[in-house]
Amino acid sequence: MSSRNSRAGARRSGPEEAAAAPSAVAEIQRQRILRATAEVAAEHGAGEVTVAHIVERAGVSRRTFYEQFADREECFLAALDEAIERVAAVVVPVYEGATDWRERLRVGLAALLCFLEDEPGTRALLVVEALGAGPRALEHRARVIDVLIAAVDEGRAEGKGANAPALAAEGVVGAVLAVIHARVSAGMGASKRRQAAAPPLLDLFGALMGMIVLPYLGASAARKESERPAPIGGAAERRAHSSNPLEGLKMRLTYRTLCVLRAIAGHPGSSNRDIGAVAGMTDQGQISKLLARLEGLGLIANVGDGHVKGAANAWRLTKRGEQVEHSLRG
Image (tube, rainbow, N blue to C red; front, side, top):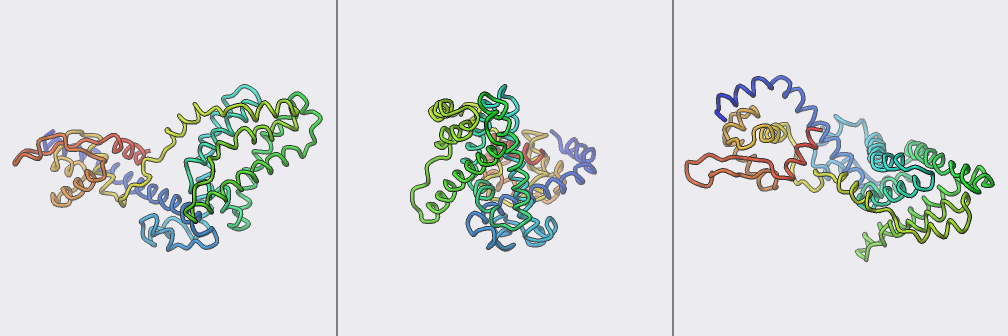
């Protein structure tokens, strides 16, 4: 690709790119702040978290934080809602895809336990820290519990369920959450004491399903459920699909970073100069340093003969680079 074509491409996409990229970077920064909030809340306790804790973990400035949130409480509530949305994105599709009440609860519970197992910060935020984060956080949590109670209460239309009291669903959901809370709390304590981690949450699956169906289908069905293996095949696929490509990325995502990744994605095999032209960067020293850093992070690879004196580099996204660029674009 010639420099002339690169500059033409930059002119064609310039105004829209300039408007979209800062907005995308702001959203990325917001997500980093929310994830950092969940992590530091798990480490320090929701009531002890400060803005300083959050911005240090997120790798953003205090100014960036206050551009996104009015205060710490607003940030915590946003992190809580974001965590709830991510759980729902995993659980709801499989729940709605099952044909009957018991199977809906089986696949939904398995997906929930797998998600919580893979997301320690989110797990602590939802299960433990939300309880001590104040009245507004409890209101958000209560809305989710109402949905769970309604789903379990459908069991009164099953088998012996007509004999179950109206409060049975509330009691079942409270008992299940109490068991999960105890396991998560024990795991957090073990981690802080550097002891062995608590057993996986999925180990609770059979016992929890037995608790859920007991008031509606009777002791025999509850016993069978406690002995059945968890439907982890689909859950494992969803775990891989829902993994966060930005997790553990040791860099600050800026407007220029986003533009460069987009330039390489749209023009694979481009040289430093061509990428700089598409990304709107004229300082070749800056573009070279940024490309070297992205290469060091494993996001891009030089597939040209740049190591030969005088030959041009040819940059392409790596597999992880494609995932990160796709996530940023999304």
